[in-house]
Amino acid sequence: MSTAHTFGGSADARAYAPGEWAAFRRWGRTCAARWTLFELATMVLGFMIFWPIGVAVFVYKMWQRRSGADDLQTFVTAKWNEARTSWTGPRGWGFSAGASGNAAFDAWKAAELERLEAERRKLEDAAREFADFLDNIRHAKDREEFDRFMAERRAKP
View (tube, rainbow, N blue to C red):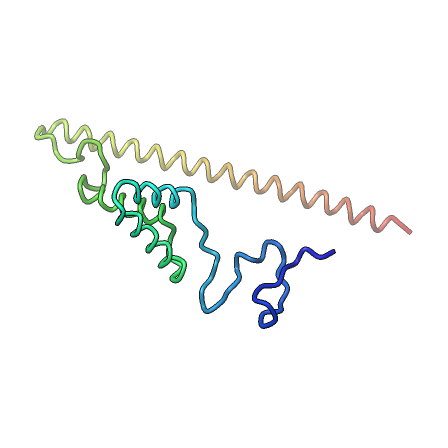
């Protein structure tokens, strides 16, 4: 018994596997852009609060389906981050990185930040060295297992 399905009647008589329907194309459109829970909730709440918001979400989803653009949540997150950095600068919501007005404090702060940056670089280098060490151990173990397999294979008559 086959679990494959055909779409479109006799004109599209190709059989599709169960998971393959998402890539089905017809009339130049793809069905791969599924609705996420965020998009559904945004559209429903948009219709409940102010109907043009719901229509805008629906229109964006149809445009996304045709163009292959990002989903709504990714789009909104990117736009939010752009707006946030334009409002507050690259540091985010916290205090600004500007000068305090005290030259001694600013010099101490710059030295401490440089020291912390050097410490961070040292930690990254140590993490990279440890990852390389683990890779070498895995490689040596794999080589040993392969050599043992080949020796056992040669020993068989």
